[in-house]
Length: 136
Picture 1 (cartoon, rainbow, N blue to C red):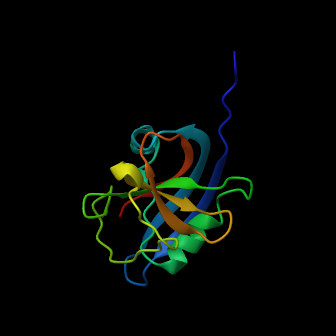
Picture 2 (spheres, one colour):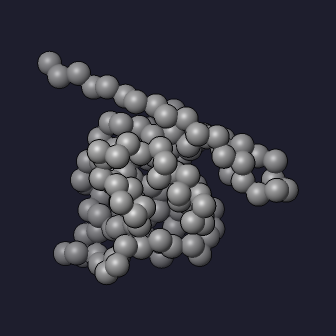
């Protein structure tokens, strides 16, 4: 029987000088489909991570170990919406992305090993992921 190990890395981030709200990003070093990752985040934290600007994307990137190439975040194709309902026009796509290869790439993974740029992926792939805890 294989063992599943979880690695939790906590990072507290204060959003905006006026919000006064804390959010903690948590890297989950367990591979799941995008939907499974979303369910996990909603059950144990708040939701999959949203990166609404370059600074937030960089801070989420700092959580992902160098050996992990990409991790699910909370963006999905429905006019590209964040799972937690937040609005942001910020996008950090890798060159030639999103490409919707084979018309089946509706979920987003951030390629954190190098750039932190985003790629669209088939939602059934299994990847580690980043959740957040706290109020949006």
